[in-house]
Length: 407
View 1 (tube, rainbow, N blue to C red):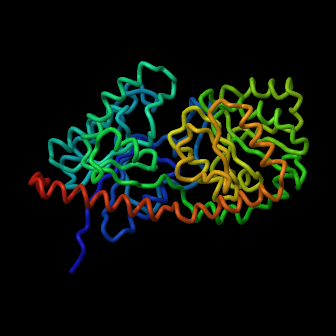
View 2: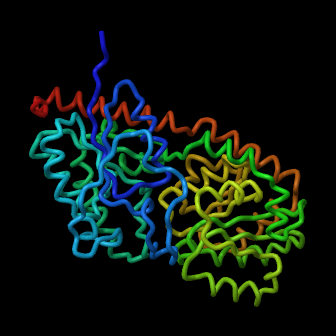
View 3: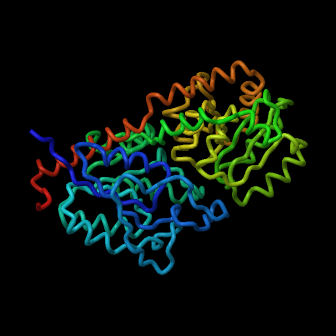
């Protein structure tokens, strides 16, 4: 007897390098008939990223081996920076006439297109699944008035979902704290294409990359890999690196953003400019070189729902130091085994951890090896399994309630 095959529509703001492998795996899954609807093609089509401050076009395939469509965006000011930046009225017709067993909205409720799709599912009686990568109520801009608003609004908003897809253990705990029934919360681990990263890291000629960076082969290297934005707190790492005083160590910044001139100036004033390298924006195909030629990734962010660069770096053999605001700390960083967690903004503690890690080459290697092993149990296959389970749960719930979509 053939297994039931679920016809699923996944709606995304735009193609993202972190999800393309999951879509390919889902497209091959025997229980899923997948269609992905994009609200824009930013990232595939060249355009200026306002946070990087440079023109970005990802240099890895993002639209291969799965079925997709891009719906016209009728916004007067199209983009990803505002509620009305994505207005895709075609979602209404697609959801209403597509005969889907479930609709998964990865657009986020901050866009008008999410509400178009959500309204269509409610009108149709089609199960709606969506999620959040949040693990607490912290707003990115630090505006405290948003905290009570979120605490009031989120339980009501998230109950709109038949099932919530949550990418971290911290997110699962948050959903339960908001009062959502456990059976309507499914962990779908925030993952990257593990096999690709392992393969690419294995091809890196570390000596060649370090020669290009003008860094000695045996020097310990700390890495910051993110946009140079205030909430990422790249200045904390710079100051902690200077304070750690590991004289043979180097610091790499891979990323672009408005804080770069300030960081370059401060590196000079701290007297460490000769041991700091600014690589600028590094596209996806260049990142394996960066990770594999470093020893330790540091993410000092004050706002970081997860921090997928930690996945990538660990797969490439980097240990990790992260702030206690980084969501990945809960699932990926094992204190003293493959990395460390420090209080956000505490430069002294970060400096001590840098000194402890960068000052002991053997210990640093052990931490990196443990980081690589950790990723053996945080995989795309687990993400897909969670996704399929969530679809099955949503379908069963609708069937039991007698609100099945007309077929």
